[in-house]
Length: 91
Length: 193
Image 1 (cartoon, each protein chain N blue to C red):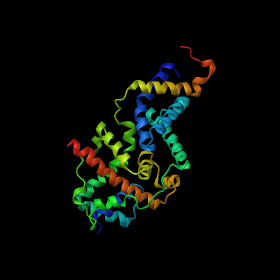
Image 2: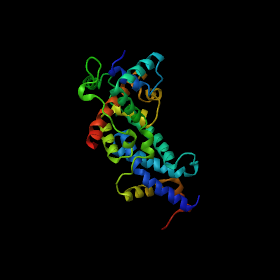
Image 3: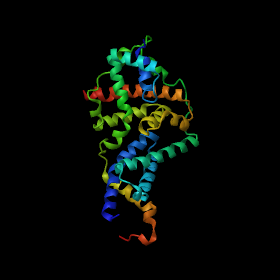
């Protein structure tokens, strides 16, 4: 039998590496019986996946788009593809 | 590539830049350094425009470039001695508050229901709270969490980057997840209800 504190340690570790069979059994048994730890596990899992939605779904900030357009314009001017003299823009 | 497509790429870069910035800020915890890393990533994305294969989404590709730049920046910060040494016991007292001596959850720390956690990710106020909760973590803890969950490194790779043992990394990640969980619950779930 393990208690909640040890169970959270194992459910965290499981996100980083495979548990031993004994660890996995202890965790599964505890989570089956403990509602609080089931919630905790679900929330750890959500945190574990937070990188992808950040890229795909995080809402755009309400900041001024103009600022970002200017930054892209600057990047464009600093990039090698635009410093080529034959390609110099006069407008 | 035609100019219109290029113009379209520039417009998409401008639209994704706020997210690139918040990603970089979460990771570097330094506004100026984050601006630099994002700017370098934008320049690289423009220069390498032709090498975008279209296999992944354009934004995902740009984020991939940013991740390389962030790892570079982080190594630089480390070389310049900007890091506190890793302290094995830091944060242990927070766990002692979350759990009773018996190992059960402390009454005020029992995880509550978050409704549908995935819905949270589409909510702007969730990301503001997440940002604040990340900032509340000690630098080293946030760094390890970010390398693992935002940058997607394995704990083995993290140990190489930051110079800790794998067992350390698991301990740090366990504390980080517990603290973030609790902070998100206080800041977002309870306020949203």
